[in-house]
Length: 255
Ligand code: PGA
View 1 (tube, helix red, strand yellow):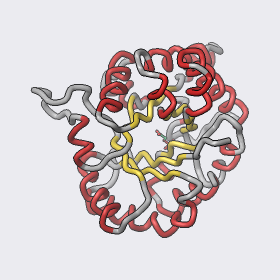
View 2 (cartoon, protein in one colour):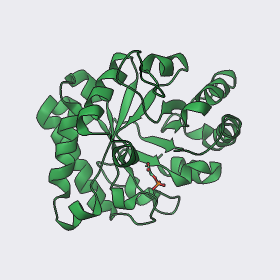
View 3 (cartoon, rainbow, N blue to C red):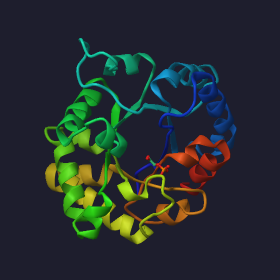
């Protein structure tokens, strides 16, 4: 399969600028041998993007940089918000969009996720769009229909070429930070359905190219089981991304 696996670390609201630079320097030697095979991305909080970006540039690390959120406007009176061009200025490659914590605590909707996805592409970065069902949706056995709806809303109006470059992270809300996960086969079923949705909207080439990650309690102990599944192209990692050795062993499992 031609898709290059990706392992992205979502640092959430952890790590100062200095701590983030050190974590990046600690991750690098542990993953340096795997760069050809696996795309490694770190997503620090906004305040650590500059220091991590500087480490990546000065030490010439082959690591991608992502932000955890963005506003969809180019600039304006939006106190506290960050515009896409500000992230480009810090050499960000990716932006996480629509993480379930943003949806739950910060009023992110399918509509704002879609606006942000467009804005990220317009700035020549790539969105990592997060989707995933709550426990209630899962128990009602509506997971695939729900996730398909989130995907369709997120990608509305994108071009087929953009859809092909998109990264979608399937993160069941009930698996994030809980130590609980779906079975690898169950996660793969939803990831396959996400890929099929992209195919239905944009055609088969986009479906073949779009990378679909699994996220939610990915650890060194379970990562390789998820990566063995055909429609899972890597992972979006939260807690285990804050420790260089844990993150690196997940990267290694993705080879
Ligand atoms: P977790 O978080 O790995 O700590 O479950 C994943 C995420 O929220 O992206």
